[in-house]
Image 1 (spheres, rainbow, N blue to C red):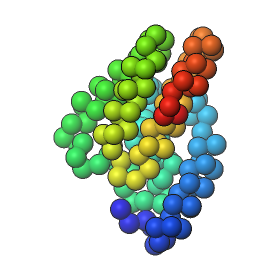
Image 2 (cartoon, rainbow, N blue to C red):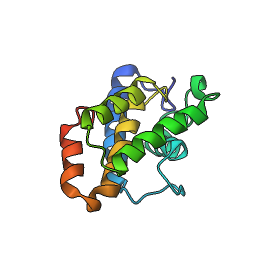
Image 3 (spheres, rainbow, N blue to C red):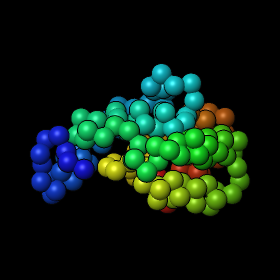
Length: 142
């Protein structure tokens, strides 16, 4: 995808990383983007916040437009497993990997999903800090 700044690939990688680091540091798990739950709509708004200054694509990849309900269901299932402290962290990691591999966004996909998962985990951390710390520490993807 073309970037709005017309940067070459090498400069783009550096700028994208710096932009992500800055913007993700601004996000607190209490940021809701006017959404009542962690779902596909939240994920899209998060992606737009993180990368909208750099890329025109602020929506899901064309290949998911017709399957957005299925994608939303997968995201909600993953959030539910995290919320209810599902004990098989490897299974949760596999779901995160599957979500990343689906390549929902053409650019900034992995970083957006990782930021999303961290926000979900942090939003429930007060319930059981040791579980959520373990989830963050054991996850190879976050």
